[in-house]
Amino acid sequence: MTHTLILKAAKFAAHKHRDQRRKDQESSPYIIHPISIALVMAEVGGIDDPEFLSAALLHDTLEDTNTSPDELETGFGQRVRKLVEEVTDDKSLPKEERKNRQIEKAAGLSDGAALIKLGDKISNVQDVVYSPPSDWNVLRRRQYLDWAEAVINNCPKVNTPLENRFSSILFQGRQALLSA
Image (tube, rainbow, N blue to C red; front, top):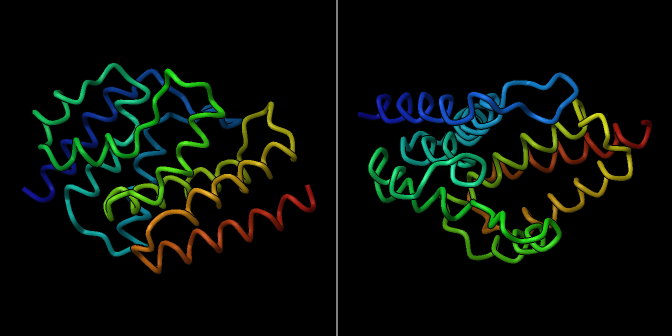
């Protein structure tokens, strides 16, 4: 069951995100992002809970695909659905409001959602620094790092290795952007 749930989530996410690309310069397949989140959670954070890792793989399906909460619950259970819902932005809101809400909501995240949020921000900061969207200048990239830091600073402290990795990636990213 452990590996089956994770593999089932990977397959589901790959199918749902099949036509999506990242905004990086290479237009990478989108599925690389959720896989990188689950991988950093497992490798760095030592997370082996199949529901946490499955939710990491599925974290953007409600927000960015035509997936419904019921579909997630039917396929992966109530706990996974709840974790995904916790980290899902309300796309009906303007971008700035969504970003502010992420900072505000971070303090109330469950441990599992905080782990996913850490993995997400580690992945995104790396991408913004080393493979940014072509239309993002250095100022916009620095602003993203500041915002990501505000989100993570407001999250419950749940995993020291992941928190240290985020701090390290953030520091390295800021150093790299100083010379960009």
